[in-house]
Length: 79
Image 1 (spheres, one colour):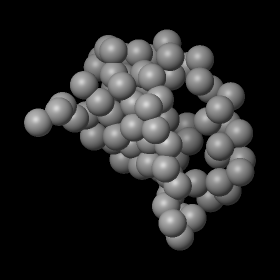
Image 2 (cartoon, one colour; image 1 turned 60 degrees about the horizontal axis):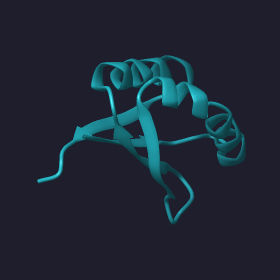
Image 3 (cartoon, helix red, strand yellow; image 1 turned 90 degrees about the vertical axis):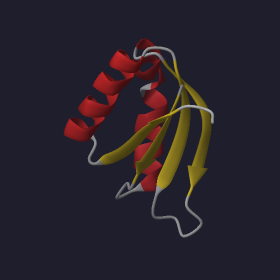
Image 4 (cartoon, rainbow, N blue to C red; image 1 turned 60 degrees about the vertical axis):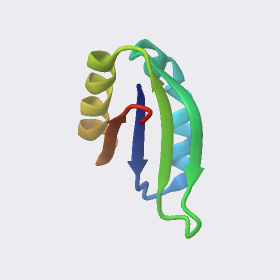
């Protein structure tokens, strides 16, 4: 299973530093970062994660929405 998230940070540089600093938190939530994209116009960031534990991953998404602003998240399976 994969998780696709979309973030719209006010300041990309600060957001990226915070994102990098919390890699351990994502690992504990059963998430492995596969790819990180930045919108061509610079307004948003999309991340693709491999999910090892959906319940823990959902907890991470919920926490992100409460602390780091709105995160759009979609759990997906290969078709």
